[in-house]
Image: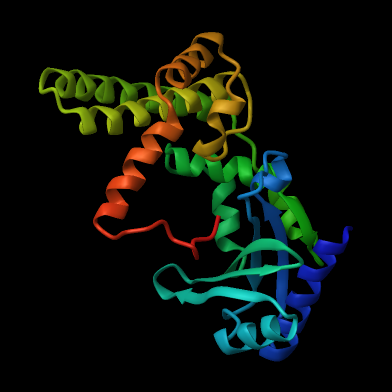
Length: 256
């Protein structure tokens, strides 16, 4: 286990001691685990606690003692999840704290055929477990499989969604509604990418990586045509100039 993971485990141990709560397990998911990380990527960890979320003040105290640069520490009671966003050892870190393993159990039993539920299964499949004293997370991970029946239903659901979006796209063209067209067009390409990855048995993760991951030559050609026709830096420059004109500047505090 590398140095950075040891740092995270040490932080979790100290939070556990300070909060007097037992940690049930933890794993890393996201771009670092999948090998798609870039200079803007953070490290995403999911941590499970017994009975309660660790106290916010305990988490702040531990992170300050570890000389972490804290961006945000909060609990979202509606979803029983705490979020710690900070920088340590020159790495941006996002820790999601959850209570119990029940929600993890639900991931393997697909109930909703959405991109989010599909992504959750793949994230769990590819996760790098860093703490699992009872091997329960590993057991659940091994059971997180997309069966042929589920795959067919995902493909059917996404195909219907694309069909509706294509009709909306046609209407946007007829209305000459350019912003609406761009918004729907991006959504169509996202669904095309998910469908392509699913059919090719490739990992479906976050949309920011779709352009790099898809292998379908026709879909890749669409992405290449966009790159040819749209100069992103030029478009960005125009938006920045207008924003500057009305005294708005890009955030300097936004995390990855």
